[in-house]
Every structure is written in structure tokens, then in C-alpha cells.
Image (cartoon, one colour):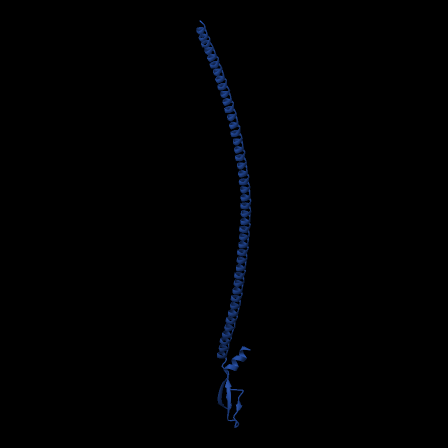
Length: 203
């Protein structure tokens, strides 16, 4: 095949006389001259080898370029897929973390609000109970004080009344006694004087 291609590429037309060593030519009609050709032999083989080498190199380069392009495309696609998967995983993880954080914060806020409400209610109840107890104690103390004051006042009044009555009775008794004594004395004195007067008249 290489020789045929070389011969096809290396035919050299020549004009020769009859009897020449060249063969395979056609006569020009008179038989004295013919157009022939010779073979270039080794030069043709070299050319064919060079052409074949160039073609093989071109094919190899094309194949290598295609393979490299395919490999590059595959690598790029794999890198893109890996990057997309990583981005999706990161986004999913971030979303899950955000959701978990939000849920935890909401639950914490609800618990804090409930605890605060319960504490406020308990504190309010305790304050109300304490206020009621204090009010009751104050009322009881006021009532006791009022009762004690009233009792003391009554006792004092009774004592004062008794003392006054006793004093009045004593004074009255003393006055009566004094009056009686005075009257008796006066009567005695008057009687004595009267008797003396009578005696003096009669004597």
C-alpha cells in the first residue's frame, strides 16, 4: 500500500525516443516518440512515510486533544457537581442549624415567659396573702386596742365615779356630822344661856 501510494505520488512524465528503457508509455501516433514516466523509488517512500507520520501525529494530537478535552470536561463537570453538592449540603446544614436555633430560642422564650408569668402570679398571690394578713393583723390590733382603751376608760370612769361617790358621801357625812354637832352645840349653848338667864331673873 505504501509503495502504491509512493508510486502514485512520484510519477514523473518524460518524453523519450523509441527503444528507451522506460516502459508503460503511450506512443504519440508516429511511433518515433512516446511519453513515458519513471518511478522515484526511495524518494516516494520517504514522502509517504513523512505523510503517514504527519497524519499519524495529527491523528494522535487530535485524539489526545479530544481525550484531554473529554477529561477536562469530565473533571469540570465532576468539580461542578461536587461544588453544587457541597453548596447544597452547606445550605441544608445552615438551614437546619438556623431552624434548630430558632426553635430552641422560641421554646426558651416560651419557657421564660411561662416561668415569669408563674413567678409573677405566685408573687402576686403571696403579696395579696401578705397584704390580707397584714390588714387582718392591723384590724385585730386596732380592735384589741379599741377594746382595751374602752375597757380602761370604763374602768377609769368607774373608779372615778366610785371615788367621787365615796368622796361625796364622805363629805356629806362629814357635813351632816358637823352640822349635827354644830346644832347640838348651839342647842346646848343656847339652852345653857337660856337657863342662866332664867336663873338670873328668878334670883
